[in-house]
Length: 340
Image 1: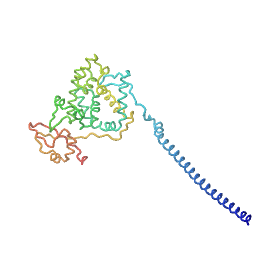
Image 2: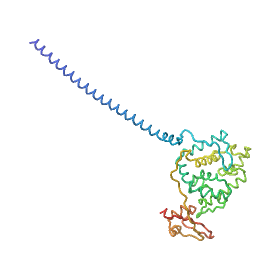
Image 3: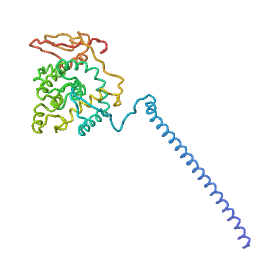
Image 4: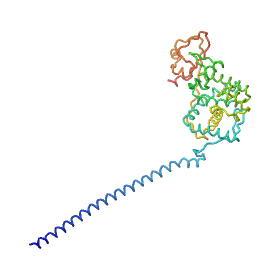
């Protein structure tokens, strides 16, 4: 009985071991199956990533291939185009000098990569330059000074600086009055582009007569004539490019040169302007009396008060007293329907 009972135990042990081994085999297969699924998933994801990388690379290279086919130079991102020679108002810029090259390159880089600002400037040029150019010419001021207006205000007609300079030419109140502009609570001719250009031309003519150099005249528009004269005397030089000035005034002429270069050759600096603000032709109406309400005046002439202000930003109040019966020319758009 004892032996038979012992013998009867062994088959049970064998059966248990067999079941354990079979159970372990199934688990190993399940683990291997999961591992294979994970492996295949990783391979698939890797293949997709490789495809995406190749796809993106192809599309990045496509414009370069098209440029080569069309003969268009590729976009330059590491540096900018530097002109071989440059002039300002007929005066040569000494680009052979290292310091001058560095200063001009800096301003071209800054304004080339301030893409949104420079794009807006390029769009506004056709609207404002036709007004500025003939006034400069009539006053004997070189055409290059239109770029001074660009760096002063980015051709924003309503811009006001923290110091209180106003309009496209950024004229201070006291300076504007000295130059003959009317500036009061109801009228501020610093916002009147034609009259402000006349005033700026008057200032620049006086500066040129004082310094005998258009470059120094431009620098004085920023730093002031007294400051430029003082620095010339102290540093014993009459050459703008030899003067050590404050950063703002020292960069000033180079900014003008940079904007002149970019506006003259926009595509060389990767600007392709598809839309430009058009000139806005206007008729003028003489006003010699007081105006109780400019809104009523605007409506009587078939436009809104908003449109009236767009064409006459120099009107600063909703009424005009005009006790001296001065004659004002109010601009009214020729194409009124374009503003409705």
